[in-house]
Amino acid sequence: MPTKSIDKQWVDVLADVPIFQGLSRRHLSRIAGMATLQEVAPHTQIVRAGEPGDAFYVIIDGHAEARQPGHKGVEMGSGDFFGEMALLDGGPRSAIVEAKTQLLALRIGRAPFQTMLEKEGSVAAQMLRTMAERLRAANARVSD
Ligand code: CMP
Image 1 (cartoon, rainbow, N blue to C red):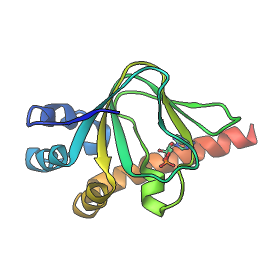
Image 2 (tube, rainbow, N blue to C red):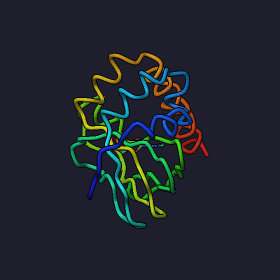
Image 3 (cartoon, rainbow, N blue to C red):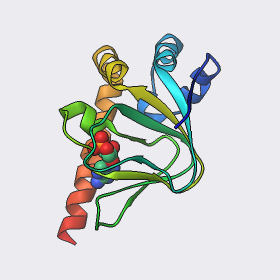
């Protein structure tokens, strides 16, 4: 899938993304420098369950769905992120993530993702909050 690097104007876009909330323009600019933009056609699988992970994604525009084979999917839209799990634990991708519409995503590779989490404690904390919410929602679906 084609990617292109992003420039300073993206700092304003990143400032509105929940996981980057509260970061200074200097820090947002550093994150922008770590990322590329990826445009994805509808119905494209961006990550596939079972494969090794090489990047983390933040949806800038459009909708995607994460689903385990045979299970109901979880919808994601602008500002949502995915692809963190395989980078965090080194395991395989836990789900398929498929674009439901034309999608524009920020892509951050494995090494810059590690650097971002080491340098930006608030990003790591927001990621953990979201992962806790997702675990609660998944637990609730299991007990339904
Ligand atoms: P990863 O396992 O790297 O690749 C698939 C991604 O789908 C995963 O990271 C999460 O970002 C996302 N994902 C997996 N399970 C769920 C879930 N239950 N709710 C929301 N997102 C999920």
